[in-house]
Length: 90
Image (cartoon, rainbow, N blue to C red; front, side, top):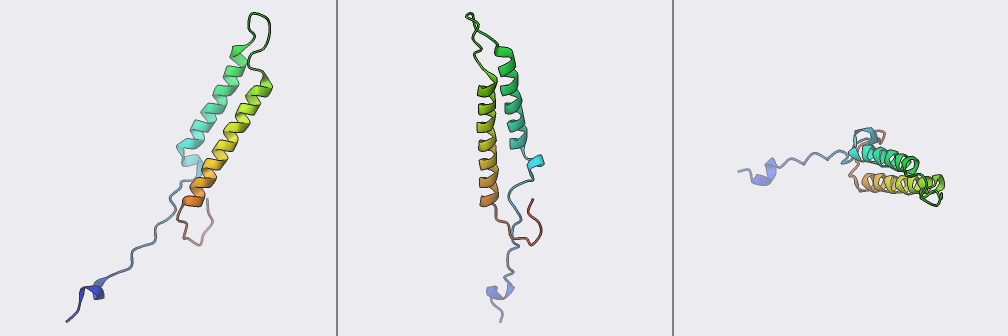
């Protein structure tokens, strides 16, 4: 008489949890945020005393912070994925 254990099949290994960067929404959110910073830097202009409130160096610093945040989030997503394939990782 055969038992239940004789009919157990191994579960298939899951693929990667993460999508390629072009298919993820975080890339588009990042690009929209960068565009927003650049547009805000251009539009804000000068105050009543003639001082530029949102200078270009401040805008590029904000973009640098956004880039670091995006790269860290993608790195964490890739590090947390259960990659078990032998092919090239996207």
